[in-house]
Amino acid sequence: MAGLTKGMIADVHRKREIKLPEDFFQNEALKDMKAAMVIFFERSGEIRLIPMMKEGGARVRLEVEKVNPALMQTMTQLFKHHDLKVLFTTGFCFEENRCIYEVYFSADNIRTKEPDIRRTINNIPGLYESEFEILEIGQEW
Image (tube, rainbow, N blue to C red; front, side):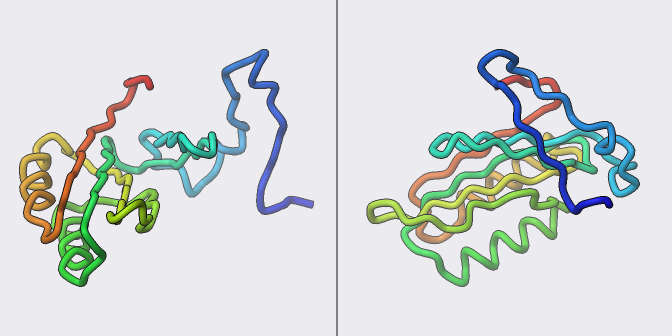
C-alpha cells in the first residue's frame, strides 16, 4: 500500500550526499520542475528541499519594529506584482525588541526584478534592517 510520504535514515557522517528517490523524478506534479530550493536551518540543523517551477529564487530577511498591516500589505503586493512564488517563510519571530521575518521564493527573471524588489523592501515602515539574496542554480553553500 502506498503511503503519503517516504522516509529513510542516512549515515551523513560517512556519506554526505543523499540520493533522492526515483519517485521524486517520476511525480506527475513535478513534471515542470526547473530546480529545487534547499534551505538549511542553522539553529535546528534541519534541511528542507522544495521543488521550484520557476528558474530563479531569492531569500529576503527583514528586521522590523513590529508586524503591522502596512508591512503585510506591502509584502503581499510585492509577491503578486512580481509573480513571486513563496516557497517557505519563517513567519514572524521575535528576538529582543525586533521582529524578524525570512521568506524564500522562486521567480523567473529575478535579476531584472531585483531593483524594484529592493526599493519596495527599503520603503517598509518600521524597517530596521533587510537582506535580499539571489539564489542561483549551481551556487553552493
